[in-house]
Length: 185
Image 1 (cartoon, rainbow, N blue to C red):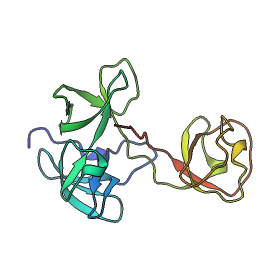
Image 2: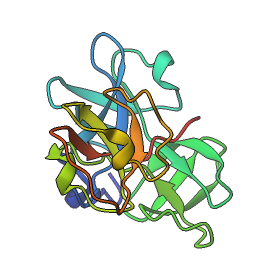
Image 3: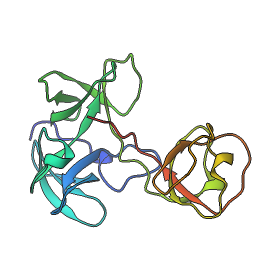
Image 4: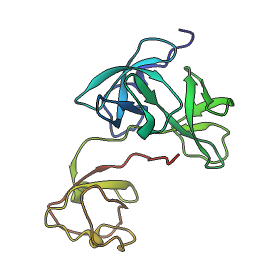
C-alpha cells in the first residue's frame, strides 16, 4: 500500500477539523462524508454517519459518482480546485498529474495542496459560537441572525446558510455547527 495515511485523518469530524472530507456514492447519490479506514493505496471505507461504503479514489465530480466511487477535492495556492487521484502520507497527486505535499492549511504561499476538512458536525448554541469562525445554521430558533452575522446582510436566513460570526452580542435559541471549506470544482 506504500505510505498509508495516518489514522488521525479518519473518523467522525471534530472541531479541530483534521479529518479528510470525501464525497462518495452512498447508493443513491454523491454525498459528503469522511474516511473510516484505508484498505488499499486508493481504496477507503467512507461514511456520512449513516451509510458506509468501500470506495476507490476517482477523478469525478459528485454528480458523476457511481457505486464504489469516492473523490477528494483539493485547492492549490493560486485557488485552483482539482480532485486527487492519489494520496499518501505526505504527497497528493492531482487530476492534472502534478504532485505536491498536502495539508489542511489555507495558506496561499506554502506550496502545499489544501485538502478539505470534514468539518465539525457538533451542533452548538449560536450564543456559544466563536467570533470570526464560519458557521452553518442548523436550526433558526428565535434568533435574530443579523446580530450574529459579521456582515449582517444574508437575510432571509435559512437552515444550511453559512455566515461569519461577529464579535457583537446577541440572543437566541438557534443552533450552528462549524462550516467545512466547500471547494467548488
